[in-house]
Amino acid sequence: MYDYEALIPFSEFQLDTKHLLDKDSLPKEVYEHMKKYNLPCYEWNMIDVATRARSTAYSYEPSSTFGFMFISLVALWLRTHNVRNQIKIRLDNGAEFCGGSEKKLKEWNEMLSFLEVELNPIPPKAKHLMGIIENSHSSDDEYFLMIHAERCKTKDEFMLKAQRWQDTWNFFKPHNGKGMNGRTPFEKFNDSKTLVFSHVFQFPTLLLEDLLKKVETFYSLFCNKLGGKYVFTTCQIFHSLYAYLNLYSCIVLSLFVPPFVTKPPILTTSTIPIKPFCR
Picture 1 (cartoon, rainbow, N blue to C red):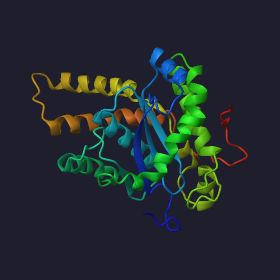
Picture 2 (picture 1 turned 180 degrees about the vertical axis):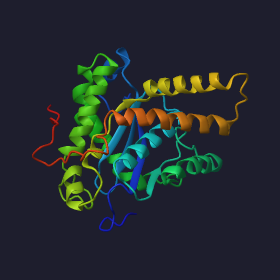
Picture 3 (picture 1 turned 180 degrees about the horizontal axis):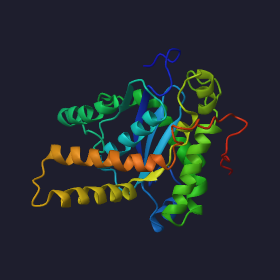
């Protein structure tokens, strides 16, 4: 468990995926609408334990390529916003991550050590250790999917609603869990007096398939420059993907992050440039 009194923002995280097309969670009409219009099927969600701030992305498939991509994106976003402490991420043993493989976990941790990120899988059948992020899934159903999914007929419309839902969660939704005392994630962040840039709360929700297309483009250019045949190994594939993911991530993040040569915008509860979700 966590020492909530001593926990600093953006040091401990919980990471999970949610299968959005869940007949047991969604009304039949919402489920059928999402299938009919081919809306994204999976949500990738990382929550900061100290503030409950969340970063989300979406995809149509739950592949481990997307798992590594999402972890790297969030880590880069945090580092860009002056998060300097070690980042520990608790996750389950799903196939979209390390799948219980000690070898794969070691490989991922070695590559992520560049960003001072450490992955800590939970033991089998220990879902209670993921209580914070598991509880967030029901909020996704109740406040987002059940209300807004049927209003979306394209993936772009869905992603826009998803961004607004993430902003609502981070800036306007009070939380009553341990250490929160009815505060929103942004209020808890302000109370911590941390030197992390407040813009960190505006993580851009992305469709991972679209991002992967960009990574593949960079990778193709790299291979063409090499010339001749290239023999792939698992390690080479991961390192190449990681290198070009970092390159594209820097381009993506530069569109959202204020330049370091200027003072980053300071958000207060009275000047947040975001509108909350309405039912």
